[in-house]
Amino acid sequence: MKTKRRAFAFLLVLCTAATALLSAQAPDKPAAKQNLLVYVGTYTTKTNSKGIYAYRFDAVSGRLSAIGIAAETPDPSWVAVHPNGKFLYAVNEAGKSSTVSAFALEPKTGKLTLLNQLPALGEDPCYLSFDKTGKYLFVANYTSGNVVVFPIEADGKLGAATANVRDEGKVGPNKERQDGPHAHWIETSADNRVAYVADLGLDKVLIYPFDETSGRLANAGVLGEVALPASSGPRHLAFSHDRKFMYVLGELKSNVTAFAKKSGEPYKEIQTISAIPKGFSGRNDAAEIAIHPNGKFLCASNRGHDSIAVFNVQRRGGRLSLAANVPTGGKEPRHFVIDPTGKFLLAENQLSNNIVVFKIDPTTGGLTPTGQVVDVPSPVCIAFLPVE
Image 1 (cartoon, rainbow, N blue to C red):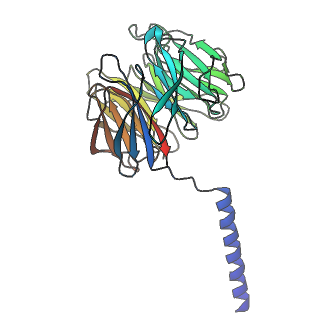
Image 2: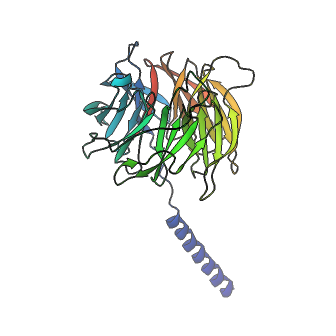
Image 3: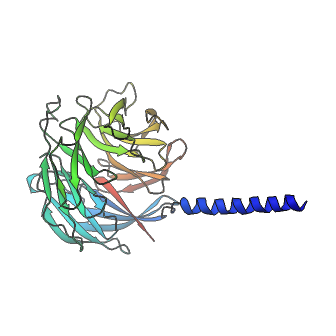
């Protein structure tokens, strides 16, 4: 009996030690904060919008509460909150007079204070992102087809550009929309060594080497490029969490092209699937794409069909299957976001001047309207900031 008790005690000690070791090796991921600031970028030209609007968002109830105008600024069609939560950056889309603005952010009030504003060094900037160090701001200029890198100073101001590269290559066959390069999206890789650029005019994703020490980009094609089906018009990208799969949204063909990547090899196309249901023949321009935090499904927005396409993501193979097209409750959903907790999706309907909140089923990706519709003039972009 004593021998059995000793053996049991020994096993108990081993289990306790193993549990402690596993806990130390794989700590629990911090839960997403439930209270968030929401900044909404808008178009002010030919609308009654004044600039960037601020809201508070309760990620438990999905409730948006208006704060008001955070900053009056012209046509802030894309906004991005810096990872440190102290600054916000916005494009000011105005053709050859386009600029990029830096703001100081006050979390308690939501107000923004202009720090400085620089020429975008291109026409009609449409996307902003940060490198992985948070030291640089990337800008994609649509009409002029170039990408620019601005250093971010310690006080949040933008410094003189460290890179300005125009995309190069053969244009796609759509003569109306693909008359030249049109950079529409730029972000760096997980290791911060390259920048991916979706170019709508070239039907390609270009891969630029990036030097985080100097902030420079090398010429396109040095590391490679990923070709899309003709006339796709790549607009935005989404990566799986392990970066093994890349999903490119084609604005012109309303499709999603999936690519798979093995270690040390380039991305290879595995599938192209439509984001609109069979039988729909009206005008449509796909706009935004995002993967849910749990990686089980992917969403894309349709302008014209005015819906959110929900795709199931194959766990191992990465292929997509269209599960549903959910009406957005408005016109022209130019953008949507999934909140950091993964519980809600906010669809911005540009031409009906509203944001519609949906509850997300974490198992199926199903979207159910919560009943909340918030009036916002010409909403076209949302950025979250978790707060206490």
